[in-house]
Every structure is written in structure tokens, then in C-alpha cells.
Image (cartoon, rainbow, N blue to C red; front, side, top):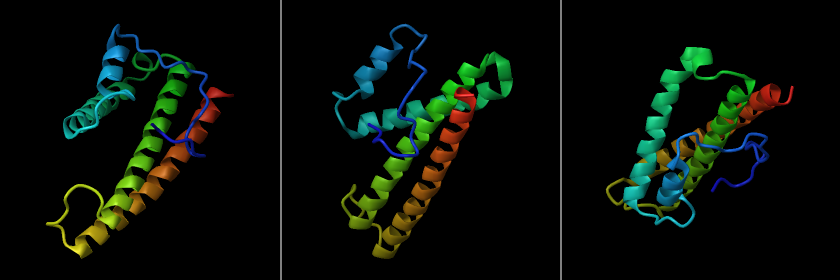
Amino acid sequence: MIKPAWYAITESHHPRQLPIPGLAAQLHELFGHGAAIDPARTGAAVEVALQMVEYLTDAVPHGPAALACRDDIATLLHGLNLLLAGLTQISGRLAQQVHAGTTADLTRASVPDRQRASAALATATARLLEAAGRVKEAHLDIATR
């Protein structure tokens, strides 16, 4: 779950509805709070996210065919903000785990390699945080004006 933070949109005027029947229940079953935490689901979550990104990358350039009104754009910005906020928190946690050596088996990685990876993840976290904040600003400009 995304933790509340200044860069994340915590209130919503846009209900999270999925127009495809049964999809919300299926996603909740696979990835909801009660779902098992294991490498297979983690890999599946990454694949679902990549498929979503590919779809949006193809759809958004079509303008009104994908985003018919201001509310659609606001909903997209809201979702992008939450995705960036989540990625910020994930990369920050990974940076801490790699630095502390408490993540998956990294015995083949040298200490200097782990230190560089941790520093790179920390930098990525800072940039993701800024991006989430900027998308939040854009959302507020579109959704509230």
C-alpha cells in the first residue's frame, strides 16, 4: 500500500472504477491485501504494470479517442501520481535493503557493486519523488480549476 506522503494525492474526486466486468475482483484476488507475497506474484505484478504502460504509451497519443474530457485527463494524472508515489517508495525500500544487505541473496555482488547500486537507487528515489510531486501539481491544476 502506498504510504501517505506530500507527493501523493491522498484525496480523490475520481472513483476508481474499472469498466471491464470482473477485472477489479480478479486484480484484487491476485494482488490485494490478502494475497500471498511471493516471487511469482511479484513477477506477475511487474508484467501487468508493463502491459499497462505499453497500452497507455500507445493510447495517449490518440488524444480524445483515449482521453475524451478533462475528467479523463485528471483521472490519468491521478493514477500516474499514485504509480510514481508507489515507485518512489519501492525504490527507496530497495535502496535501503541493498545497502543493508537484507534483500534477496546478493552474495555474488561485491560490496562496492552493492554500494553503487544502493546509491543509484537512492538517486532514482529522489527523482521519482520529484516527478510524483510535479504530476500532483499538474493534477491539481487540471482537476480543480
